[in-house]
Length: 81
Length: 401
Ligand SMILES: Cc1ncc(COP(=O)(O)O)c(C=O)c1O
Image (tube, rainbow over all chains, first blue to last red):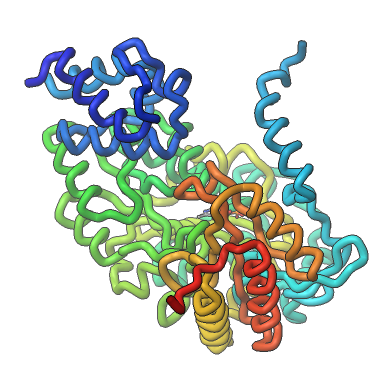
């Protein structure tokens, strides 16, 4: 299973496709606050991640996600189960 | 500083909209001259933005039934269904609904919103999983928030994605409740009911179908998308509303489950709100009869829907995926949409303006809808007016090369 850092890199790979070129993205980046993504873009990119990791994120767990790192930890926990 | 400060960004967006001349949230109809003709600020408008699909709001027999019940039973019930708010009319309407759908039981709620809130929050308990279409109506999302279940979204109208998510849940205890809509309210597209029903059968999940926009519209008898697709047996619960094709207000759920009536004493949005006024109940029951007596209304509706869809499509508008009573025009941005909407109203055509995030793909929509009460001439006038403004605003796709 992928470890935390690999998951972060994977998420950043997806995010690069939807943020303006040159935007800095790190584990601490806030997905809505710093990257300015709207809810629809977020939903589509989360669904792509769910496919990649073969998991489903509950709406509750998503509501608690703020940063790229939060999302990576949530995915890590699900893939370890 | 006030508790309302958090709405400042919303207030700014709203103010920007009003600067464009559009205040779609404050339209007041001063009079209704027919199901599709109104006046706004004293000026006549054609109504191409409602949910009055069968045009029944002025049906004389419905109106008379309402007046009679108002005289006989008074203005309201002043109580909940489980206290003093169940009159003969409520139970009679429930019997008629069950009979119409060919089901064992029916429950009537005060609105369709509450029907979804009630059913979804009550059916899906702590150990269960709710699977919602990503484009679900607010009442479905709100019902899921009231529920103690885990909530998972699947891609809009995508049975394969639904199946994958159900497979991922294998081995996890609890029931799975799938929620879909017969016709989706923003783009007017139909649920892929046959495939969804198959996924439901293969995975042993429970299926709830909200036929809000498809009651009286789809199916040989107007029972909705599940009837049209021949999968009514798979729809364990059918929810719907009286506020659209039946021209009144109220919500319902029908089911064949033997223990259904237990829900009457555990659905909070059923128990803790006053019941529908008897006049509304009488109107709606008569509306159901009128719908059954006049299947030709459904044919007229579909004819009108095709006329509007084909006309707007030929003019070069980007529309929803298929013709139906809801024909939505996709526009590039909020400024164009607001200008378009305002110009339409000035020309005497009212449509709904739908703005993101309430729209599925972050584009604003002019949500137009047709009814069985529109004449060909009225539909043609709407097409011509939209086309004229669309051309002036440069939003028509020129498909002649
Ligand atoms: C899909 C859907 N479900 C439920 C409702 C709620 O219906 P009601 O107007 O009866 O509250 C609506 C209407 O807005 C709807 O579009």
